[in-house]
Image 1 (cartoon, one colour):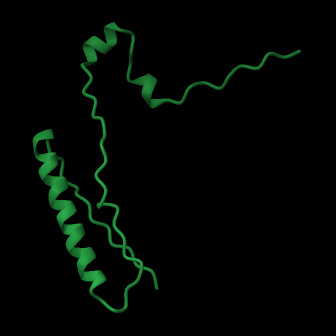
Image 2 (tube, one colour):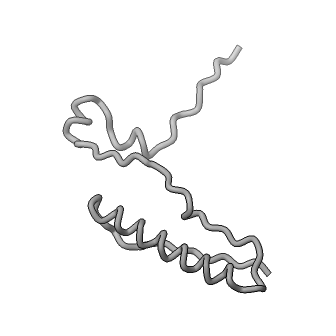
Length: 87
C-alpha cells in the first residue's frame, strides 16, 4: 500500500530566514526518510528534498513598473487568443 509523507512549511518567512527554514525542512525530510528506510516493510523510499535547486524571486517596484508600462494585470490574465481572419 503506497503512502506519501509531505514535509512543508506554512510559515511566511523573510529572505534571511528562508535558507534556515529550507535547511530545517530538509533535515526533517532526511530524518523521516531514514526512519522509513530502516523498516523492513518499506521499499522505494525517495525524497524531493535531496536535490537543491535554484530559483528566482523578483521584487518589483510597482511605481517603476507602472512607468515602464508593466501592470499586474499582464501577469494575472492569460493572453487573448490569436484572432483568425475570416475568408
